[in-house]
Length: 72
Image (cartoon, rainbow, N blue to C red):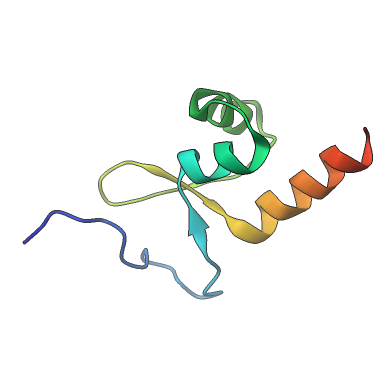
């Protein structure tokens, strides 16, 4: 056992790709803690892995990214 929780989460019904906070942060050029704050504020929905880590849906993140660049 290597302890990895990168396998598909339970409830993989829509088979969307899940991103880590670090991956989302890199897309927006912000700190991962900022992504966590966005999630707590309701800007992004998230799922929890069995290990308790947040994962974000790629399609939702891309949509938010497009909205944020449209406002600039």
